[in-house]
Image (cartoon, rainbow, N blue to C red; front, side, top):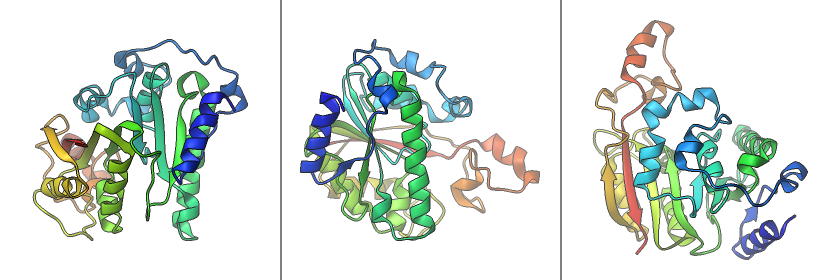
Length: 282
């Protein structure tokens, strides 16, 4: 373990959470001084999964990250990165001068069963992805958190916290308030919380299963945690999304949970209409 990794691990332990990923032997042997790259370089990187890169048309990563003020020297925590769509952009971009942290649910904090199995597979997939490409992910770390009492790092240690299309899950599981408190705690004063979420036409019930959330509801969650709404953007808006699909947002690409006969209809709509909200910790 190098000095940087050891220091982060000690800080994490003091803060009550664990660094779940350490660089593999291959990654540890990689040069610690990486050449800085631009955001455009990261977007054009040949390490990106081709199917992921095709989604740029709908997810507008360059405009979104610039709107949130992400720069190459920042410490950025991404919450539940899934298969690593944004990891493939953020980790290489932050490799030389910044720090990328992927915060995932700790499988040990989840009840036995399918949910725990899913979290274990998600964690293994992400760690394998990082270990296999040290040139891009040699400084990336995975932090495991308990969703019932989330801690994402030492207090006031992050410049930016990002979450993409996750708020609906936390609301339906009764964890949203605790998650936003965790975001507030890990950010430095002046730090930014960037939220992209499927946007409902209006407020929805906490147990709504459509995947959409009211924009005012997300703003209220952030403000209750202490954040100030700094700005909002229509970067990820999609006016073609009618938001009345039989399987909610998962009817649309990329999930495409619909009969094959309806494929052309939903491909013409594209991905969901999304709010893009920038909050600041005073």
